Image (cartoon, rainbow, N blue to C red; front, side, top):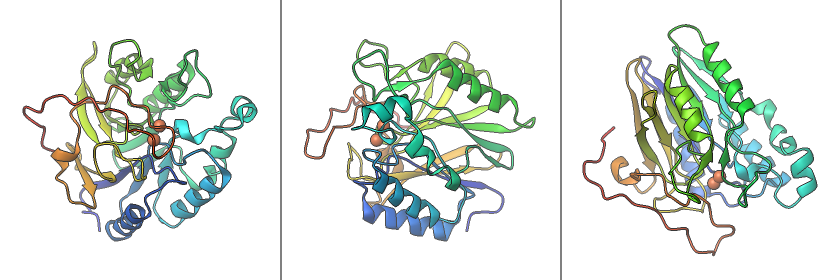
Length: 287
Ligand SMILES: [Fe+2]
Ligand SMILES: [Fe+2]
């Protein structure tokens, strides 16, 4: 059971039902049953290709958890093969699970607030990258501003908000703008997925730093670390992150030092894994 004095949250991401890792999912299911986190946040890419059967499998698994769950939409959760549906009703399939999930989760002194970064189309070649629209950001900021005084926000996104800085490697359009706005609010951290490796970094902005926490994947589409999820503990003053994995790799070895430059997942299994940008480790953070 969770320590009564602390808030325990599980941060899962990129399960990719259709290409999920069933051994890892069974383990996470058991962990949730035993530890009883107050909430589970899933930061997108619930499915592989947004197929109806993949959403049905996701529903079945989420329903079996018996704890509050919030799910943010990922780029893989919009129709991939049906372009007409992608343009006209991009969120219809994802919204079919709305009855199961909470949009915003409020816990004592802390709230999980969504910020959508996956969009149906973009004026650039690769639509799988992140995009924060003006409307999505405004909705997120309004939700944060409406929280009771003293409440801290955990902002749930799919794509990491950090702009890497060079053409072709920027992850999320308007990501820096969003970070600047979040830095001016009581935001504990931004929780994300998409890159399939866990991280816990502080991103500087003109308005102060913002903590960015990424969860790994629970799918077979692993990058540089085994399937994992993040265990977050909030004691009212400090947010601790522990990357959990079946292979018992220590958290600091699980957490990559930087968001990979190329955060695009390979299209299909069997395709070469995208290279991971590794910054030489000097003094790894311990959380
Ligand atoms: Fe993914
Ligand atoms: Fe993704």
